[in-house]
Amino acid sequence: MTPDRSAVILDGYVDEPACLGVPPYISPYIRTVAGALIGNGYGVRYATIDQLRKEPGTVEALNRSSLLVMIAGVTVPGKYLGGTPATLTEIQQLGHSFRGKKLVGGPIGFGFAAEGGQKAVRQVIAGFDALLTGEPAVALDQYLNGGEPAGVPDYSRTDPWSVAGSGIIEQHPDYPYVMCELETARGCSHGALGGCSFCTEPFYGMPKYRSTEGVAAEVAALYSHGARHFRVGRQPDLLAYGAGPGEYPAPRPDLLEKLFSSIRASAPDLRTLHIDNTNPATIARHEEESREALRAIIRYHTPGDVAAFGMETADPAVIAANNLKAQPEEVLRAIRIVNEEGGMRAGGIPELLPGLNFVCGLAGETAATYELNEAFLRRVLEEGLLVRRVNIRQVMPFPGTKAYTENTLGKTDRRFRAFKEDVREKFDLPVLRQVFPAGTVLKEVRIEVSGPLSFGRQMGSYPILVGVPVNLPERTIIDAVVVDWGSRSVTALPVPVEINSLPASALRWLPGVGKKKVAAVIARRPFADIAAYRKVAGSSAVDELMRF
Image (tube, rainbow, N blue to C red):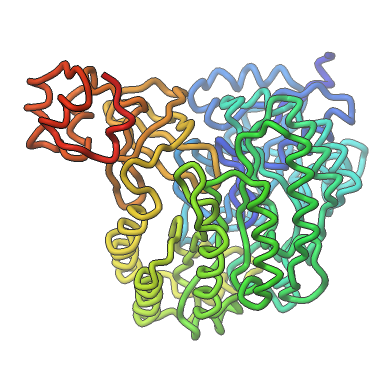
């Protein structure tokens, strides 16, 4: 590799309404940019913003490359465990410190804000030679060949690049535990009528659907490089894949069957196949087609899946003021349907459950909005319906969206905080106890934070945070049995449960033990068998997983 044909892709991470690229996820942008670079004769190295933070000397190593392409930008901020997206300050510092040619692309082009509840600001990103606007890989290819650094999504160009660039995942610091976000479409059908007031997805235009053959070829290439974890996530409404025109097109179950069966055929020994966004209005308005589509997904996916609903609010006035997609009754109907089709358990966990996203600070919001939100969630509880997760965030308005000038940020902050606390205590906790009852075994939990209370997650779409009261090294892979619950997490112990060697800090979490009996259990160890243990602690749902 000659010095003038070496490039580095720096992953600053992305999080958009229909695309996640925060570890352990890797976004489609990274792979298509890698393919475009390879196609232009570059040798490619990959690094993440977290690697630079931990090892600042890495910048000097990057300077041995002649070209830097950074991908970054968050438009739907969240809480992250696996990585922290690059800040605007970090991006600009990197632009000034790298000596070669420097390009930056991704949703950072829409603007930047430090967190939800703040307006994003669109500005020139100092230190870079060019901003790759639109589709980063296409814009990059244009630039490298003497054109303008701008490009629209074009699958005839990016599909071959996604295959050529698939090997970049082997350089990811979490490899082989990398979740490959798969793109099936770009743009939003709701954008025909202006789109939701706060959403950036309509910036990509009306839907452009990727072919099943293109997706399958990329999956096969990723699989050949060791990928075993996939999420069909880069589309605003997966159920509308390949569907006809209109704001709420009816699902095509036959196309979804073809898509998911082809992914399975391309990656026969995959470990994870999950989904992300589905529009609850699509499900409610096209019930039979949606049921068939959900069944097709369930036939090929892996259990523990989540269909994320962009509900935003239960207040009809806010829905009208912000051109939102679904009325509360439609969302409730969609929750019922997904519970009926996906609520059965496989390996101890539900196949597919809905997730709810609330966005606060929208135009028309009042204190009564939060009362309606709370009342809606009470109805879900009263009906015994299961919801995998409830995400609550304040809007981050971007230039070019209606919410940028029409919002209620700062006017109901106290009520917003009270709403979050109410949901965590009165909704999340009782639902988690139903979704993950004591004795549920979570397979292949990967420890991401080590300490007296280690934290890990399974690979998946919105995986539950698992607290393990044992000091385990990062990247340890364990099976863990659920013994208790927090508002957004579970406490679990490694399987098998080693009764005679577990520390007191872990023993106290066992059902039937607690703080009162832990001293007695320790005093009577070692136990010869389960019968001896039960004489001290009684029986529980965890007994069959104990080893003596």
